[in-house]
Length: 103
Image (cartoon, rainbow, N blue to C red; front, side, top):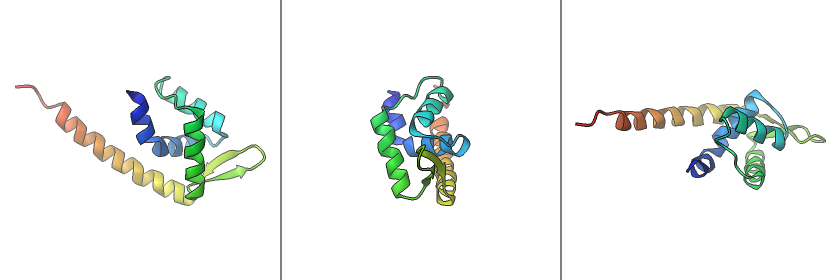
């Protein structure tokens, strides 16, 4: 169940992790797993593809190419803020539906 949610929101999750903990793909995956209490463990192939996508779109950059250490760009910070607002709005809507008392 979590895999489809993670896949759908992987850009948001990776941007949030990299904002706080710039690092290589392995470090980013480890941080994602730790922050989610082990619930989010996307495959390395999926994460590498997502990181390349973020890099192509100039949302992350290699701060240290030799160590493949990713960090957010200014565009990445703006994108993260936009994605976070959209996510919070979505969560608020879901909570409004799910938390409604059963009659």
